[in-house]
Length: 366
Image 1 (cartoon, rainbow, N blue to C red):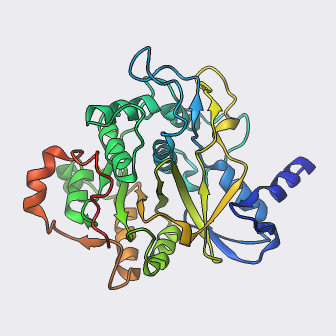
Image 2 (cartoon, helix red, strand yellow):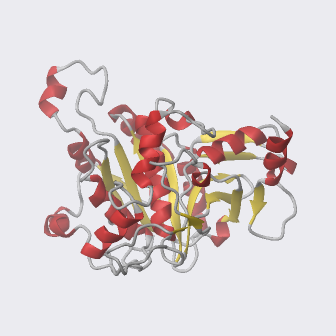
Image 3 (cartoon, one colour):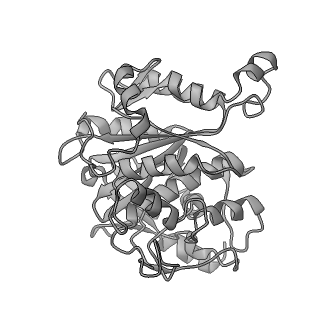
């Protein structure tokens, strides 16, 4: 590394408190989206991984949302939407980048798939997951333009938008009632069961499995996270299928992508207002990557959050479920069931799957 890179790596590990030590000065294990590192030896690899994640923040100067008089910036209300964008974009990298989880960003990158994914999320009206599309989808379900979203709301909105994406198709499944129902997911993703039965299983996608993002909205306490769930959160960050989690108080949401064994979370912070950059007309994408690692104590985590996992193939899905069943304790954060225990309720609600957008406190406290 050159001297500028060394200086950057040495200065990037900032906590959100008055602690003066940096990760480069510590000796601890940490995980970032399923990959294990150890400080100080892996300091530069940690930087490389962190800066390679998409970083979507408040922006100003984009086209008005909802008409000429609509907002042209999302400062103060768009943070959870930005966190949802970051989480879903990570899933798209897993599914469509040849490097998958091991994708690493560099300035002036010429990877066409990377640019296609980035351009799906930039602030243009017709970009698949732009702030415009997210706000308008929420507005169609009763959310006011400029109103803050909670983790459940953004999960439901992303699910709706994903059904309209025809280029890079994925399924987004939102688990409700703290329950992951396996037969529902398999029916959703096994898009051609006749082909599956008549062909040799060589590639899940060719045999009809559509890439899957699972989002599980949870409330892990009343005002604070119940400490018995912290080890379960850590387990989820260690799994190779993890997309981390999103959560936070109104106007203060974060995208959590890992943790240190010192009981600190690692996160990307969307609370930086940057000018709109249209990457369909420029190759300057540096503002979409963050060069600073943020840390926060688990004890400061808001109990309302949403976990996410990415399963490109059915094999990955089965592996995820096996690991969760083997490692979650008797009182888990969420249940895993083969069939839907709330089947009668869901049959009534299936045509109103975003009807709860106006209430972020409808979660059952677990």
